[in-house]
Length: 57
Image: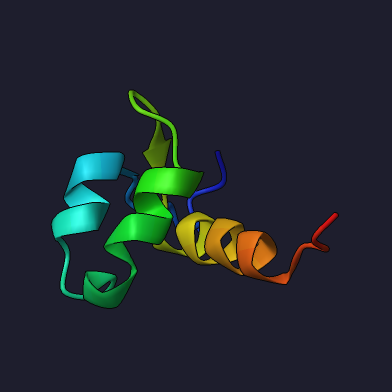
């Protein structure tokens, strides 16, 4: 890894559910994120956005 690269912190599904940043999206986090996986805030926002904008069949 390059010394100039920033690494984002990763958080568990439960930690993200309890965070103030996603306080209004707890149900979405439960539906979109997998147990036992870790996600950055950016990854979480992207997964939620993709879920909300996908086409309904």
